[in-house]
Image 1 (cartoon, rainbow, N blue to C red):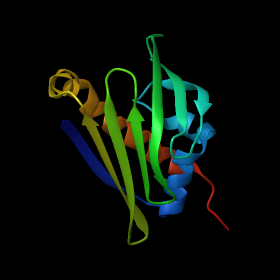
Image 2 (tube, rainbow, N blue to C red):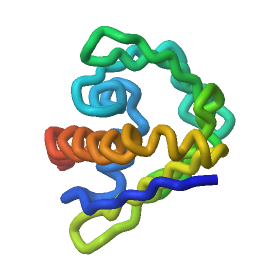
Image 3 (cartoon, one colour):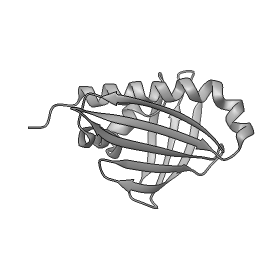
Image 4 (tube, rainbow, N blue to C red):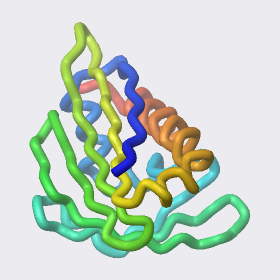
Length: 144
């Protein structure tokens, strides 16, 4: 397995960061690299639940995706198994860090050759995902 790891600190509490991941409307706004948008067909946010969606690239190309939620620990961790090619598991861990939240994003590909072939796409795309997620969290109104 080959794993791509990135992390950063968001200026928000773990529950606020998690909320932007658990809400399909909000998730559809930020999921994927810059310029992409999403259409969700199925979003069963629970362990064993399915997530079927299409990512629409900025050039008009559609990318069908299907995943399963392996584990969900509210405000702390979500593990997603991508069950169509390319096969990988994404673990997202949220840890309180002062007034913010440390986000750890670990994407583990089953096949090292596939990981090597997509490295040039995955590494910047993962950073763009975090950029978009961070902006979504920052745009949300503060809790009372």
